[in-house]
Every structure is written in structure tokens, then in C-alpha cells.
Length: 341
Image (cartoon, rainbow, N blue to C red; front, top):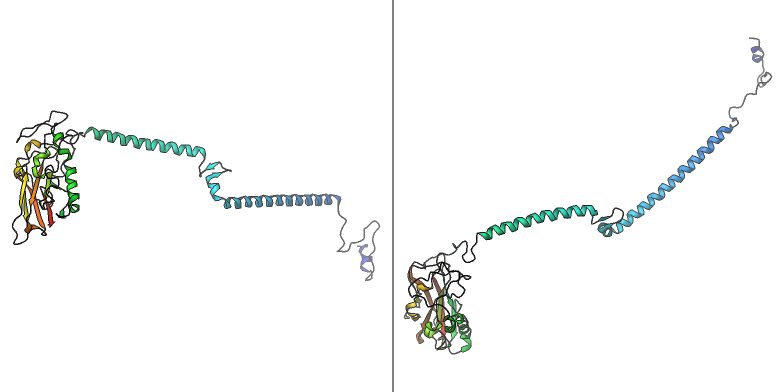
């Protein structure tokens, strides 16, 4: 209590009495002297900050380099797709990946090829070299004519008009030359030539000379120079066909009103197709076979010139069909002739 009394009686502005050894009071804004340990800590913090700044600069440089690499890769995308140096990929795949995928496709397509070859081999075992497996396309043969034209039109006074027709007929009759047909067999007239047990079938003779005035031997123009043209008619080949009866070709003409029917001559006589030319065994087993022909000579008169004649020829005298409205060429053929004087 006694020590506080003098302090209370002290005048304003007067410094308080201090006891011996007591430090004077510091001003609020006066800083204490820095301790040496604090200086060391500050130095370490400065070094740490410098290290961080260096690391930050290094990271910044690395990011800049990576960006440059990315820009370079973007500039050259095709080269990077073909071959990537960093990953060693070629066309987007590594060597092991390419090896596995090639092995897979090799096994896969090899299996498919083996299945296909096995299927083909089994199917070929069921086929015959001489006879087709399915023959249900046409039940009866069709008729075709030579020269091959639906309309025969020419001027008999101008050889250039009919030279094409004549050339076709000569070329078509080459396999029927007498010298070549004499090498074939003389078969029985009116009888089927059955050769089921023989591997190579013989062919029956059909000589060109049988067509007489339409053979092109005595008259090399086949009557075209006289305005009386010849037309050759043949049947399509059908393997195993044996017509019942005695087939022959019959032709009729459709002429304008007031004109007489067109007269015709047939070679062989009556347009007969002998049964000895049947059956046909196929091109491989019957290589020398030739179809029998019927030649029709159209005897046009002066009244028939400059008039279009429509001629229809049909197979008659057998079970072969010739009146199917769905197939106009089945057992028949229609053509037109017009001769100018």
C-alpha cells in the first residue's frame, strides 16, 4: 500500500519514479531487437521460396515443351497415324496386336475356304458329266431357222442384198459336208439309235446333199438369186428326247387377201425328221452329233414380189408340243419374207 502512494501524487507530465534496475517503458511503436534464430528462419524461408520458384519455372518449361510437341504432332497427323515413335504403333496397332489379328483372320478364312471346298466336292459327286442334273426347263424342243433372222428381206437383182444370208447358210452347213458325214455311222431308218451302255456314242449320218436344191451345192445362192429362197429349220437339242410317232415339219403362209397360198418344197421329202437321230446323249458323250435338218424352198411368183409373206412352221405327227401360247417358239417358228424384184 505504501509504494503506491507516491505514484498517485505524481504530477502530470512527470515521469514515474523507477526502481533501480527497472527498464524504462517502451513506446507502443518501438520494435524489439530481432533474435539471431529468427534471422536463420527467415533465410531458410527465402531459400525455400527460391527453390519453389525454380521448380515452378522448370514445370512451366516442361509444359511449354509438351505443348510444342503436341502442336508438332497436330501438324503431322498422318505420319503419326502411320507410325508413332513414342508408342511404336503402326497404323494404330502394336506388332503383337497386328500378329494376333492376322492370325485370327488366317484361321477364320481358312476355315471358310475348307467348308466351301468340302461343299463343292460333295456336290460334284452327285453330278453326271454327260447328263444335266435338272432338265425341267423345256418339255419339248423349239424350232429355229437359218439364216438367223425374223425377217428376210432382199432385192433378188442385187447380190449385195442377200449375200449375208447366203454366207450364213454356207457356214452353217460346214459340219454337214458329205466328206465329214461319211465318217459317221449308217443307222437304221425309222429306229431309235440306243447306246446307253457305250461311253462314247456314235453319230448318225446326215449329209448336206440330202437337202438337194437347198444344199448350196448345185445352186450356191440357195435360190436367193431367183427370188425363191431356201430356209433351213432345225430342232433344239434335248438330252434323252425320244419323240413318239413320226415327226415332220409343216409350214403354212399367211398372205394378204386375194393372194394365193405360197407354194413350198421340203427336203428331205415331206419334211420328215427320222427317229434314228434320237436320243441325243449330250455334247461330251455325243461329240460328232448333228441335228437333222429340214429345208424349205419358198416358191415365190411375180405376184408375190413386194408383198410381205408371213410363214409359220410347226412340228407335226408326234407328241411334241407346238401350240403353247406362253412359248411361241415351242415346237414352231414364225418368220417373214419380202422379196423385191
